[in-house]
Length: 431
Image (cartoon, rainbow, N blue to C red; front, side, top):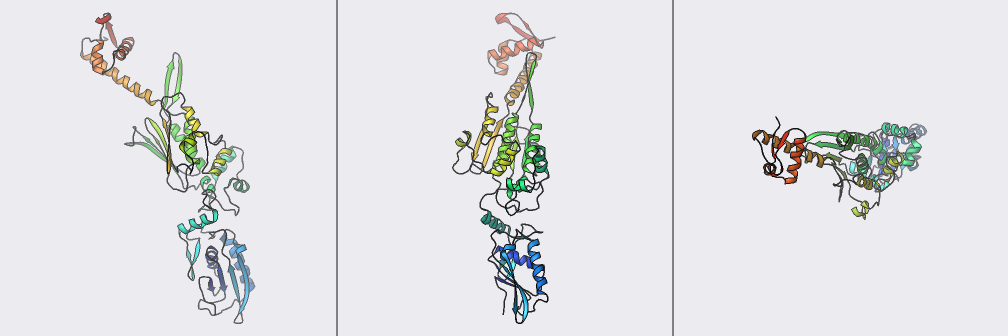
């Protein structure tokens, strides 16, 4: 008598649950499903075994992913004078197998536990993917197989590039079994990773001024985050005679390369977000994932590039977002070549930070100080009939040269009047 066990399942008739049993055996150590045998082992037989065989084959072909047809074999056996269908399932080589309509989640992935099929845990699903696909995040199958690529396709089309099944396989978006990989997940509209941006009113996180969160395809996040930073990238003007020069707080090339670095090189095996914080004096970008083993920060700053997400980098390269590997950090440094404050690049075991100084902050700070000094001098002038330069030295705690320049400017602007000469020079409020 045939009894149910870890490798044997009995069904009186062919039912929809058979596909669940096929998935469970393929994800475990294989087994046989007998159609026409009751749970207690008694033989009921199959009335039209040829029809049942065809239905079972169609069920496995249409409902189980990845394709398990090569791992499933069918035999018609006669037991106790009655015909039964034996569906023999070998342990699969492309785990995890799942029911197509339910996807790569516990409701779709089953394993054999004792004499029954049970939903696999999410950890078990990930472990099967890792064992089959290896440790490379990019090459692993995505847990989400219902992906769309509207944004990515539009971006490829803008560059006159197709993004159909053939191109997706070449780019690593689809694997050999036509399953979406994690590269596909990152480029898809359903990408679960996000970029968070925040603007603070001061030089610390004491008070939020604004914040945004950007999701979707990495390509969409790149554009949205860049536009947001650009919106908050102040412009300062200086004049040389008749000519005006505008200068952004942050070089646009530095913003671009910082964003690219955060998206292309981050470690997506962690779920934490990429964080971009804009303060009055600096912009900070923190991405998850330190340097790869054997690579030092000095190596990176010298131009050595060992890419964590090579397929993602190749896609960005095809879209002309990356010009050449290993040049991004150097471009950031070059964009600050003429500035006193330089970018900082910091690496920790599990994170990477780029700090871009606000190039106009020192100038703004100096301008604010000058306005405050002007106001203090004019207030002092309003309270005194006249005064000397040394009175202003004491008032502002500045040097003789600084006080002299300030007073000379206020006189030229008509705010103060100067009388006397030499050591007898006095100042008073203009009438």
